Image (cartoon, helix red, strand yellow):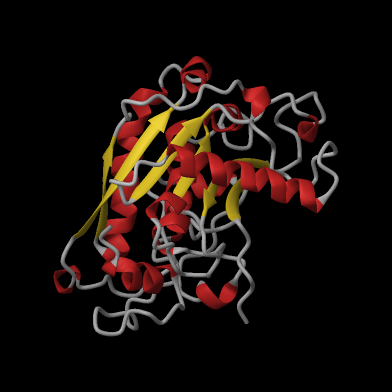
Length: 294
């Protein structure tokens, strides 16, 4: 059974440790020779506030892009040609301006408020997007880390932290909007920087946290991938449990960061170029979306 897609998708970081499962024998790798490389243009930008929070963010971006591309290439021979930062700097909002999206936030008690905040990001992304690029990613400082959602005390508390959001319109699972300005992801650089330092993640390289968050949001954007808790669309295995769980899990836990490159769930033996749209796994849907070139 499918479920109605909402305005936006977001990734949350959950302060947990996770043990890797026992490894079953993975299926054989796909014959990549059967797939030609699909390259998509993608713009990226950041705001000045993100640099103040994480002065080395600009140095991480190239690595984030390269490993995200490795993950997409592995399952569907897709590559993003990331270009940026764009010449027009992002609207320089301080972090107090960015609305929070967590439904447990005591200052946002109503679902109507949450929907209004999602619409804020949708409108903001559409206003920022350069339509000459097929996809777009925007790194912003994000909501303040002393927000009431974290009890106004220790940031590394038990509450989930929304660290990225992807806008999609129309709202159909496993599809991509035809209007390129309705495609875009917002990465909350300030929250990512702070959460990556929490003890539940601190035993892993911080760059792995950035990469997994970015790859997750690009999965939403590039193929309309759902969260993995919608099991109808995530029925395949993860070839190497040492790479963590399916990157489309709605939350991120410590064990997901064991390897630098995240992974999508896969059905090697079913999805093919001739019959790609089975919608059973991330790989099925990414191969199905290979026809998108703009």
